[in-house]
Image 1 (cartoon, rainbow, N blue to C red):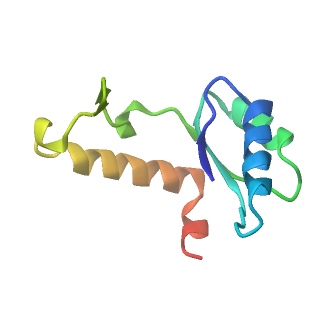
Image 2 (cartoon, rainbow, N blue to C red):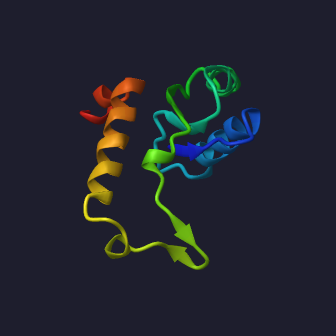
Length: 107
């Protein structure tokens, strides 16, 4: 589960546990906390999760990977500069590598 944890820690854990327990035919194996404000914020989320639902990574807030949005949707790639999407993808890959999450994605 990848979830936006801005302005929450224990609530994020409660939502993750609720989603995990909602259906029997779904196996949630871990959580990726997106948009963490600090390392301490990530630790709060980690501490609030039960032992059988690990926090795989706490990704920091990073505007270089955000997709611009407007009322009723996202700004279209065709409205952006030519290398816009590639730079977002590169920044996102760098963030995942820094967080140590890439080994989990290979399984």
